[in-house]
Length: 457
Ligand SMILES: C[S@@+](CC[C@H](N)C(=O)[O-])C[C@H]1O[C@@H](n2cnc3c(N)ncnc32)[C@H](O)[C@@H]1O
Ligand code: SF4
Image (cartoon, rainbow, N blue to C red; front, side, top):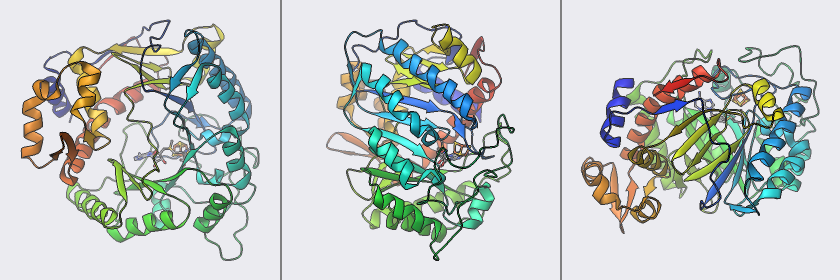
């Protein structure tokens, strides 16, 4: 597996040099003159921990979260104060973990952000379905959130069971971040006891959990309401996935994300991976069905019912990340914050950035990184590439462009390369190798070591 990624990396970057991450960083981050900068904030707390989930998170604890948010606000000021004036940024996304658990402190976090940045394209935030209640949604909207993404995974109990999640019937009631009583005696990662503290409100009036979500979303509307699904689960059929998407679009969503299930080595998930042929057939059919319904594919994994709906924090050319495990990409520099919440708070307390690793891309490495994430949006515009790198894409990657077209993975329309469904599947297939060879390896180490000396990928 890593042989494939190593050979591809060597070919595309035209160098044998691996991506080398070192325990070092710039004290002043050079973002001042960068265009179209995005912001990301990580909130690593969840009411319960899902066995399949690879993200940096711990069990919710009010005291720990408050201490973390104090540090987060300081980190935003530490970085923001290095630029005189307010820097224009496109968007701000809150990810996690379950950032909606911090709804009460959102105004403070956003005051810190707005002291240094002007956000032009809205604020996005991730919610667990249990957070989709009128009081929580109202807090989010009042703070300025314009886009939300809800982690449904599946509306169907059989797949919720496979994933070890349930859809609480509490949506629309008053189960908010401060409601319930989180069991703070259970600490640490990957606790197998899921949602034991989520004591859902009684299920009444024959309403389904999806109806409850819809009622709350109708009462408090957002520009984008996205719902996340995990597909390629054992036994999952085209009809199952189609039914989930239909339920989403008839219950308050105007955007959906369908992520193929990835079995990270360091999680405790026991869910088997679907064979490649079956997965391809499922993805091909669901993509064709979405197209037949007029849903616009705006990234590899997302489809919008309304063209203006969008939710993606991944396709930025440059971004600043705040919070533990958050990454920052500034021109040729890519850095990662420590995954340890305690070490994160300690470093910020000392007035030091919480960076644990930095890599400095050589030009071809940066180009490959750029192309990989731009292709995620399913289109690559050579004009944007040239504006970013100062050199023509066709001259630098002429053979590769010819090859992807010859293989039927992309077509050229008005000078722009658009991915075909075949290209999207193979991108996904390769992305899985990349995820398992690079992300899985790196996150596996960073979960255990707050500040490793060096990682080579
Ligand atoms: C940070 S979580 C979402 C927010 C919220 N905590 C929740 O669970 O509802 C982001 C999304 O990543 C996706 N995801 C998590 N683990 C995954 C895995 N092993 N394979 C594929 N997708 C995964 C899920 O769809 C999830 O909604
Ligand atoms: S899927 Fe969401 S709720 Fe579950 S552990 Fe991951 S971030 Fe937390």
